[in-house]
Amino acid sequence: MSIEKRYILVKSRINNDAVKLLAVSKKQPISKIRQLYLLGHCTFGESYVQEAVEKIKTLSDLAIEWHFIGPIQSNKTKYLAQYFNWVQSVSSLKILSRLNKQRDPNRGKLNVLLQLKVGNEESKKGFNDNELLAICEKKEDFENICIRGLMSIPKPSDDYNVQLKQFSHCKDVFERMKAFVDVDTLSLGMSSDLEAAIASGSTMVRVGTDIFGKRE
Ligand SMILES: *Cc1c(COP(=O)(O)O)cnc(C)c1O
Image 1 (cartoon, helix red, strand yellow):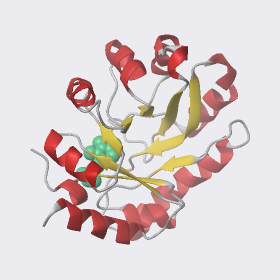
Image 2 (cartoon, protein in one colour; image 1 turned 30 degrees about the vertical axis):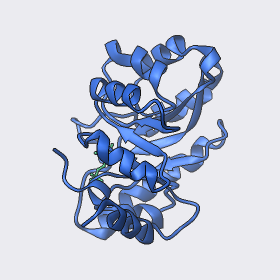
Image 3 (cartoon, protein in one colour; image 1 turned 90 degrees about the vertical axis):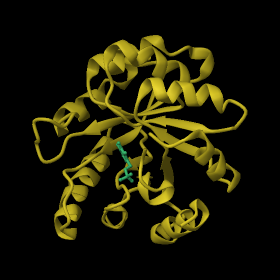
């Protein structure tokens, strides 16, 4: 199926003007990014720093809004602060402080989502509920950061009700953030679970495979 057909299908599954679509282009070739851009899409997500920076430089002729959604090592934060518009996968205070220090104020604030850990899996990165809210309380400490909301990658499940339950927990924490910060972005849902995410209040879904096909 062509990218255009896949893209139209994904948009019809979203079927909600209030929900933004982030096209996840990690491990996809530059040519496919250009193709989707020509169809009018301009927000893209990447997960690997080196690959992303190369793509951003190569595609600097396009007005793309770049989101980083991958795991973050602290020795790579300077590239994220320099090249990205958004970092969705902030999962420690140390990473947030480094991004704040390394962001050039002339580039405007860096948009950040705090990553929430759900399901208490040891391996998954992210804050627990209270840690995440404590950071929102201290938002003044990060003058070059704009906290826009939260992102989560719940444990994959084929069961729609399990998906719903995990996503609704994220929605609850998102609502609690509003006591401290003006948040507007709840980034939940990928190719396999975007319907449950939207039913739970997601404002941004991150879709790779169902737009571009299988990754290289
Ligand atoms: C890869 C990735 C996606 C996209 O996953 P698909 O299943 O290909 O849609 C979304 N979010 C994050 C954080 C990812 O790493």
